[in-house]
Length: 355
Image (cartoon, rainbow, N blue to C red; front, side, top):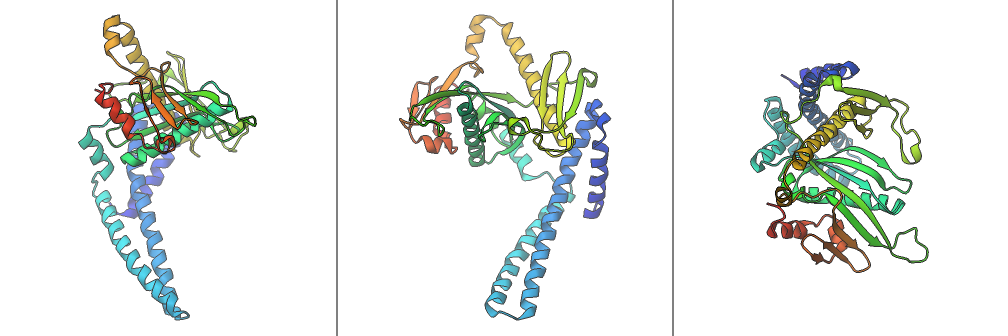
């Protein structure tokens, strides 16, 4: 299939997926969503090529005009660079059109890694805890960048000062689960907030939950068990930030679980995000119920990071991060908050916390 054919198929697919009734057929919805994602990569690659071609033409116009010798020389250099870029992009597009998997899926297959959904919620400490939740989100985002993982925000609720009351995101394409699985628990921060005029140190908390993203066969949701509501996305303070009802709320009737997603500008993507969160929470509920049936000795052997366990303290005045499970501290708190988590993760591995 050529690029024009893909664009046409992609537009038709978006029209199908915009049908609110489609979500009641979960298997068809999932199949079409996966197809949309594949076609989207091809369409985006085509747009990149068009942008490069336009820039080449602009530079050619500069050379033809012969108004500035130095500018013409720069244009020639840029044309050479852009031509190389165009050639590479066209090769990538050709591979996508042939149906080859992209590099990220190859990485995921080689590592055997399982994607995770991470939920960060502000805890005690008011606005400062929401700012801390945002700091944790940035820390994990930058750690993900250092690891070469892909990140996608599924839902978020902002606070007045730019923090997060809650943020939910997905990490994938690498050895994600084995490195993130014990980040779950209560994180505590001790620092002087920017809003504190007397210079007093505050202690605030945020909770982190790390949920493995279920494989297709692990969680089955009956469409009849879902109630779907659409509403307008809201920002800090609850004000509407979108005139259209693009935000999605899913209620799983048998369990009472409610999930939302409002980060995207269209209902389709928000529905996909909400379903991903719901599936992960249903799997967690299933595993927790199984755990409760085990004996106390068996429970003790399973070192899961629970939401209620205080696992780590970030002490800014003393430039110290302490993980309470291994009773060890690290300095360079700014570096750690910038994503340099490797020393902590490796220590947890060596101490047998991560099997």
